[in-house]
Image 1 (tube, rainbow, N blue to C red):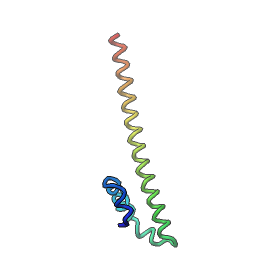
Image 2: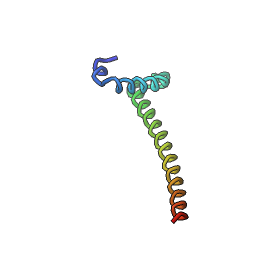
Image 3: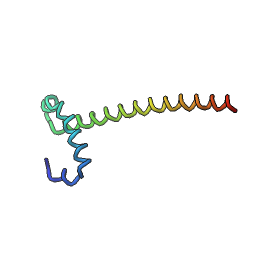
Image 4: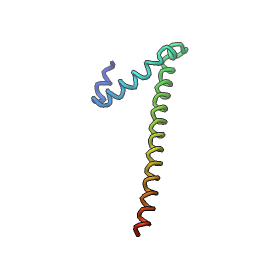
Length: 81
């Protein structure tokens, strides 16, 4: 890997290697492009977008659970008042 990667620090290097491994799974597809390097960047963007969508779904679920918990707590508080 290029020298610049060594300047990132260990945790960022792990993140980058993980991302590159995910992207490599689609090598057959982006290598068929007229511009494989550009196609590879698009695959990276798609991978990151999918990760963001998964995180957003998890956050929404957590928010819903929190809202249900809070609503239940308010009802109990009112009963005890």
